[in-house]
Amino acid sequence: MTHAGKTGLLAGLSFLSVAAVPAAEDPPLTINITANRAPQSNVDTLASVTVIDRAAIERRQARSVPDALRGVPGLSFSNNGGRGKVASAFLRGTEADHVLVLVDGIRIGSVTLGQSAFQDIPIDLVERIEVVRGPRSSLYGADAVGGVIQIFTKKGGGPLTPRLSVGGGSHATQDYSAGLSGGGERGWYNLGASHSETQGFNACDPRSATLFAGCFVDEPDDDAYRNTGVSARAGSRLTDALSGELHYLRGAGDNEYDGSIFSGNSTDFVQDVVGARVDWQALPGWRMSLSGGRNRDLSDNYFEGVFNDTFDSERWSATWQNDIALSAGQRLTLGADWLDDRVSATTPYEQDSRDNVAGFAQYQGRYGEHDLTLAARRDSNQQYGGYTTGSVAWGYRIAPDLRVMASWGSAFKAPTFNELYFPFFGNPNLEPEESDSFELGLAGLHAGVDWSLNAYQTQIDQMITFDSVIFAPANIAKARIRGLEAVAGMQVAGWDLSANLTALDPENRGHGADRGNQLPRRAKLMGRIDADRAIGRWRLGASLYGEGERYDDLANNAPMGGFVTADLRLAWALDRAWTVEGKLANLFDKNYETARLFDEDGRNVLLTVRYAPPAAR
Image (cartoon, rainbow, N blue to C red; front, side, top):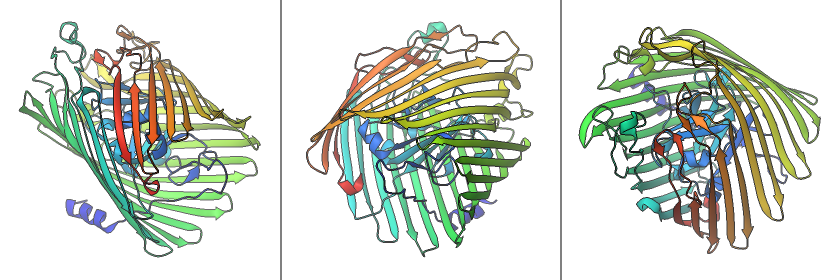
């Protein structure tokens, strides 16, 4: 498709944000859209799902997307030295590029690295985050091996409502945000802007230069970060059957880090997403949607202020989806996806673009106390040809408050442009990585405790790793990951309590010397406990988060110790609109690493004044 054609596609589409209102009950049902590409309550979804809404983001006073996701069951991050530095997500023990990331339904991420820049998405412009744990390639295609993370921007609606916040804290941190939302009987809109900056701290351990690891240099300076964000979202129900919406999100700034003349030591970045969608209720039982958009991941790299290189990714995507109600409790979803990946860089790539087209189908049925979901997808890629994935999930409600579920799903991960075409490194003959996952779960509500227990195993074959025989990447590695996730929440004496624990066995199953070793940067044990309470105008809370020991290398010769951190938070509502908030993070000033020789932040504090009338929350 030509550039003019892509622009025409985007201009001609609008987007309907799917709204679903659960039946009146206490507590209200939590709705997710990501697990089945359509709204469904978490209690009815045959997948492990975590939804983090705006209220939870503000209650925990999260200052970045990785901060908001910290402690999600089965999810951990490695971070290269504090706020704004590269943050890699490991979901259920899979690789950092085994997670599909969407923003308002649009696929994002660097096509050269295969990862998404979570750290550059402005958290003040985010309304909700959904995390689906487990394979989803049968609906979304490549990269959804460990799961899918979808980020939703603020939508708006209701009366005209302004909002703003001002914050500051350790490391000369400054945070500002402002927005305006509203709408009428048939429309909605939201405009937002944010700016965040911090002087940071020395991200890389000085020993890197002598140990030939980490950043490989000794630059004893503070590594600053700045990000300016804007968002816009607007839509309308044009008729009772036709609705549309447009959305835009942008984060841009600069990031300083420790590096050499080869890697650079600062980056100017842009991360933006623009998209549109139309929804049409063609018939009483047939809902059709057409959506599309573009994501750009742009970076200009410098060393001591002198230009070094450029790596720019551009992804265009479009989806046609049909949801058909076959009968009561029976739904069929049919659709097609198109994706165009492009790279533009000062480094010459042998190939700089590839297209992917796919068709997918899903059936969801309820038979008494039994639920069944079947899905299949066929991808056809310009680089690696055709690939088919599928999934089966079954659930049975043993009692009104107790349900068991079992599932299987296959998935695959496409090779990145760096793995395929980077000069003197890439291997254009690479095949996709393949996986099969099995999961067994039990969930219930007993004596006021909402709990779930999920066990799973993922076998990954054809994993891409460096082959010293051909001095290039090759499909020679394997992994087997077993895990157990326990989640519980309850209210005791006015306290909202929640906890989760993940036990993981991420094992290298290759045939070399590293067989049996623990996969790098994955801890075998991690968990989180939260306690929150409202007392009059005061709201107080605490969090305890911990991870076990891990290794930074395949050979397991570079251990990183386990850690536990504690956070305290306090908020005081001056009135219904104004709130003063404070957070003391890493209370005991724990010194720890999630990537070898890259320091995490010590004890730090952040104070925020927030104006948010009830309609804006």
